[in-house]
Image (cartoon, rainbow, N blue to C red; front, side):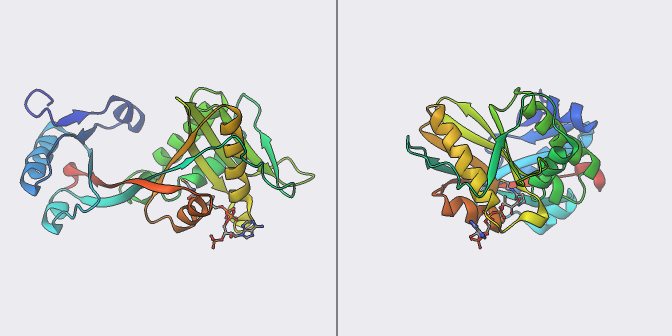
Amino acid sequence: MSETFPQLVPLAWDSEHFHFPVARIEGNANSPESLSRLLTAARTSGVRLVYWNGPSEANLPDELLGRFSGALVDRKVTLTRPIGSGELPPSASHAIRSWPKGSASDSLVRLAIASGERSRFRVDPLFPTAIFESMYEQWIQRSARGEIADAVLVAVEPNDQQPLGLITVAVKEGVGHIGLLAVDGKARGCGLGTALLAASHAFMAARGCTGASVVTQGDNEPALRLYGRAGYHRCTLTNVYHFWPMNN
Ligand SMILES: CC(C)(COP(=O)(O)OP(=O)(O)OC[C@H]1O[C@@H](n2cnc3c(N)ncnc32)[C@H](O)[C@@H]1OP(=O)(O)O)[C@@H](O)C(=O)NCCC(=O)NCCS
């Protein structure tokens, strides 16, 4: 496949974890004609799911989307914010704890799955829900073991250690990258998201970070308002498409 169509790149991790062949279209395949050629090649090669990241103004014709079961599944936004040495910890009314290194509890796994409720793997109706949930479960388990995150911070109710919210942070080259962030549905709108974010900034400052970065969905209004209030600015915007070429 990759010999004849180098722009159609097989994705080993995704294919192994989803149990079906997945590929990404790379390079400057921006015209509907070149996308159509590559999607036809994907269909011939038995690729079930193809990702294409286009510019924010990309607007693919309905005919192309219909022919390859394609849809715009995410308007991916990257937001950044400077981190100073004087980042304030959250107010004392919210108890934020560091999750001890080890395994994630069932309630932490439920929060991790909630953090992906607007993700492209959840909103794409053709993507299997069980695989979406298992991806987010693995994400929090690997974060809790310290493999892909440096901190897992949780908001807990006073007198109760059950987590009501979580945020994960990975520090790389002076930047704190936020991975998962969620607050339990029944506890939203009470300031827990704000408190978790403030605690993550304090953690980043203590680790010597000078910046914070997060990726979210362009239509995730609650998350965008939260990050906006905390001083984040939009840095990139990408339209993400999923195609299921074998479905037609
Ligand atoms: C995004 C999310 C984490 C926000 O969590 P939250 O706890 O509801 O956030 P907050 O309570 O701090 O802020 C939400 C609102 O409550 C208000 N609020 C109410 N009481 C508050 C208090 N005591 N302190 C601060 N804000 C308060 C805020 O002003 C804010 O209002 P606004 O959104 O109209 O501007 C939550 O909606 C969520 O889990 N969403 C699903 C997962 C998700 O999309 N995660 C983002 C992935 S990148």
